[in-house]
Length: 608
Image (tube, rainbow, N blue to C red):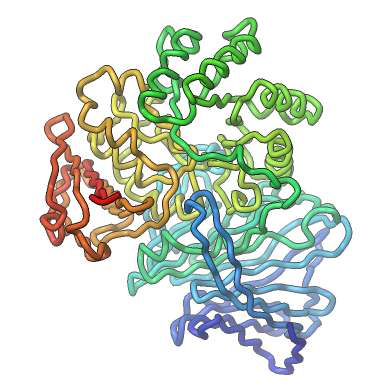
């Protein structure tokens, strides 16, 4: 690191290849601003910088800008969701002084991020002025729900509008959740979000014409950040991607989170990906009957699952709950099926109760816990989530958060977080609000760019206005190392309808070496991806339209198609059609996907 003095009015910050440029400047008594440009094209117009601490500006309006330091950084990490493939992400770090205050910029070739270094004392955050001014005519994808649950659980439908309509399109007001994904005139993409959310309130985005400004749940009353928490705010991210493949594989969020604590995660053998059975969404009068749950474990074992999830109601249903749970865990162990349990988070706010409960789960051999109904990203709930991940790690328990905000990459720092909701998922299909196909076709390019999500895909029997193969394809398109499959595994085995797909269900990976978005994909219209695991490739596509959609399949990313065999699953009049195909016959082939339909292809190496 080297110190630099800068007398210019505008500080120019470059990405590693110099393709992206951030300019930071002061504009009279209006305050401090930044812009982001790609070569000679402006991506983010002049946008405010600033915080308010106890109602006063954090950045001294009379101070001058000074570039204090610059540094080239390469983050190297390997995460479970990427099957521990090593990723190397480079950026330039710049520290800028404004009086006694310090701002840090991380400038990548794929975007930039901003955070403020806080005083080493308790601070009362009352507002943040950081804004993002975009081209108002750009298309914008955001999630919509027409009630106050929208920003509690992030379970809205992903919808398209213009950037300059985000302030008036929602009946609940101009505040939107993260991320907001924009498509620019040249068909490239911008996304606005945050990373490394800890010790702070979650960032929402308040729209005003073509500007988005950081907003908090707490409103004017603000929140307090303690001196022993992180000494800086979370990162505010503006990401850029030339195409959908770059958008899906964007590296900023993960790169800007910290590595795990080596002591807390010294032993990570308990953190294992896998498919899970789930009886809640297909429940009937026998729901949570121990005999029924054992039959689900039997079926899960036959389908090569790793887990079963005991959901809401088990503590009330079972009078001797710990004895019944212990029996199920022991039964599952014999079948090589581990058990997860559900818990309402309100009971876990008390630290003593939480620790005792987790200790009991650990002693019984439970693998993980799904906690629900946080319903806020206020600072106190973010603190709760972080402390819960730490407490669970001490007991060697995995975690699945529900009723919560989207991910900000915390699964890098806390690898026992296997997945989280923050998504409008399959449970709505049994709540008289079935998920439309176009929402599913938007998710890989919106919510899932933030990290794994527990959508609970694969509800074939209550699939709404989508086809069977559409539902099958979701198991491949929607990432979750803990992949909770909605359909009852007993049904999958007993009903001959599912016989053609059982080999795929047994073989289904839940982590991936790599992901490629294929030509023909368009947010909300069609999602087509190829995913690699080991020597095999899996192709999955869904049609978000209520009309037939034709695409041309390009398999040029596979060097030697003759080294593979191919199984193709398509829709066939309310059933699955499975056929063996010579892989070369699929390349450059025009494929018609039925309305709200899908297809899946498994390309398997012959010699492996």
